[in-house]
Image (cartoon, rainbow, N blue to C red; front, top):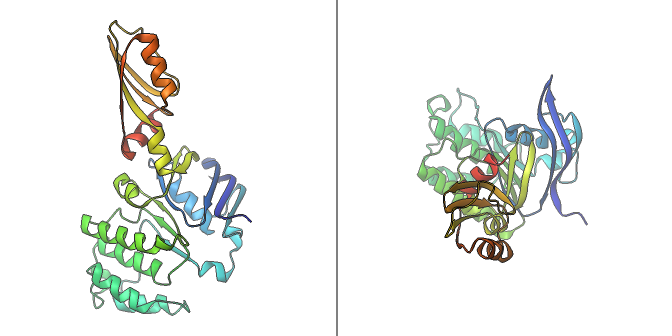
Length: 294
């Protein structure tokens, strides 16, 4: 039985002559918490909207919970929580009214949890929507996307407008949601430190395709920075298998490597009679190394 909650194959989306998605292949297993990383314009928001059926794909295939996103059933829609990057709500309503209005569309709306989130995220239920700050609107949008306890969360830059306190509260809530490993999350973000706290998988997107998808721990175990010190000057063509970037300065070199193992390290030591130090990288450094290598 296919356990993928999201699957795409050769997914393309163009707007006129501008092709934003250029053949996205992605398979997200049920229960995964996936951070979607990419530079501005890489296609992250477009991909999420295609998965939701908000945009019709131009070519290729996609399934969400086993269904075509463009023809999602009402039952499947009720199991999805979506929070856009920019939240637009009714300015003439109050916070509590918007929550009650939205909750009326869901049979399983959790009113108690919404009240808990209002308190936790310091939102006044009596406040007018028109008077909310951008960060407060983002918090309210998250409550509206989470209030029906969906099975799948699609979050587009959910923490972009939140202050550090709001981000911590959001991450704590998402961790609680995914404790049972039955709920799935796909969220785009530029804040790699947040992703490292909660993600089980990472998808790195560039130029409309997925350059990497896999478990976060596996990626961090694989990509390293090595420092080489040789008793003689290293040649200009000094290279290391799997190198993403190489900087040579006389008898030393700094190399970012996509797949470090003992064979690679021993090979450098033996060939150049060199000392080799291996450094761990955080996710932001890994993303920059992979991005710059494209």
